[in-house]
Amino acid sequence: QPTLFPYTPLFRSTGWHRDELNMFIATADSNGLASIGTIAAMAFELGQRPSDCRNMTWSNYQDGFFVFKQQKTGADMDIPATAMLRERIRQIQLLSNCKHDETIAKYEGTGERYSGRLYRKKAELVRKLAGLDHNLKISDLRRSAATELGDAGCSEDQLRSITGHRSRAVLNTYVQTTRRQAEAAQSKREATYG
Image (cartoon, rainbow, N blue to C red):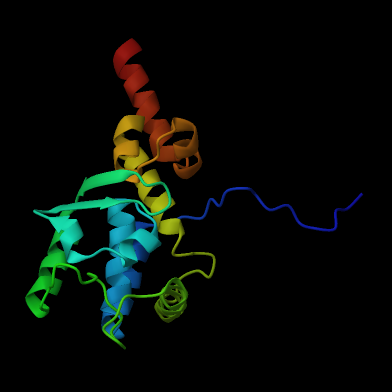
């Protein structure tokens, strides 16, 4: 008996690859929306929700670390910026007068903080201009970061220190299993047991 509604998985499994992120950022930069590229870079490199990233102020960036409280969970975060993100932030600092309480990535049209709606609209425009798959959503950047950390062999505790998840069970919904993780697991097994 056919169902009236197609099955929709509870959790999305679509993820960004680093080359897609780089294309998105380059497209944002070349179309006068570097702030959108910055927020996407922060979401991916810090493993955070875009809403937390678009609200980051210069006071949250301290000596190469992002120190903030997650809006959704209230978790206190202290995450080192990756080399790519440190360089992007350095370039912004060179080009603008960074006041302590100002948002790092301000909308170029008004010089103000992005609303969620405006950010999603501009991010979708950049995705289209970049020619990226319509299934990629900006909200997938956080899960993509967690999966990349998993591929790199990070422990669950290391992953939670980046994503802020208190529960390992919730973290498991973010980290997608990949062939690379399976290969690493088998390599560790063979190294230990022959």
